[in-house]
Length: 335
Length: 85
Picture 1: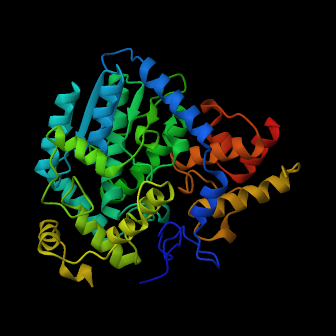
Picture 2 (picture 1 turned 180 degrees about the vertical axis):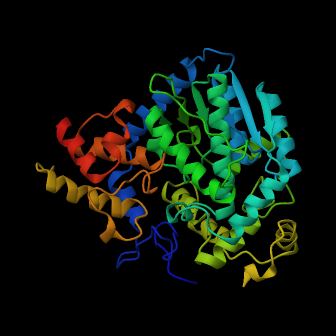
Picture 3 (picture 1 turned 120 degrees about the vertical axis):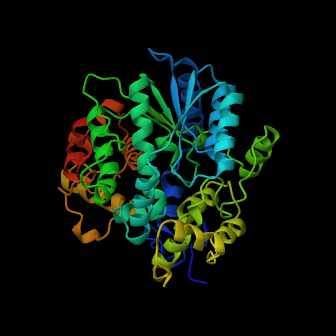
């Protein structure tokens, strides 16, 4: 086993690790120095509670919630409905490889939450082309590689652009994400970007997609905002609610949510995930979820043992080979 | 100690960026390197930066201050912090 941070399990080969002589990574040092105090956290929790209980859209929707049907986004949707009076629109992107069970889960939780539900399915051939390219080459710059696999990053770009488009179309003042506390820092849990910042973020998401579709396509949206427009506020409540994965899954299961059986052990939504993980591990020598898992350890939401367990190399099983074949990839890609 | 000069601010910010974000080659992080277009700062990273600036320099930063004119390079960030102190 290679070196890892002695505090959080972030692998030494991760681009952000920079382990010091004592085996402690930079994110741990950063966390020790700058993590919000309990008082600051409480202030943010109060601010979010006020925000989620007082925001009203001019149209019929107050918040768009990105929901894949996986555990985190399903829980975000359910709790937003339970804890707030917001009128919710759940948006699911069917990328062609989403587990049918995940789609069922998204429908079920949206129904229980009393949310409108919109499922958007881009053309399957285009999605195959996108994921084929993302499997063969890294579409995103190095900055994205440390947080997710190339395939996941490509899909997330489509999701972000579409959800932003829907938020604009509906005049929704909130756009909610199910990022776990390990995926996005507490400090970014309640952010309303200005129009000029949104323009840059939109461009950053479109750039990797335009490498695959240089002439553009009509399903990759480019939402644009003028300076006078009210821009949606990004919220990811899981950063502020207590995050206990086992408890979340147990409570979701009581609602009828079921863990998909056709995905790898680190996913609760997408059949492509295993392929993305396997390729990333071979290409870079660490698990694409390493940063998130280490973040969960750092914030006390996961044990080091479990984080290590989840970062074990993924074997090339028949499911991964089948998905690879569906994308028209050569077996050479695993060598 | 809170620095008082622009060069000190630049040095502290450079150290923070190298510590916190993915900077392929720290030597190439120049005061005018565009932080947003290069992806060093993304939509979550920018808020982490803002929280850090508020904490470290005792300034208050509103959403309306988080614009490329203030955030897109170490030079711009230094000038922005200096203007707020």
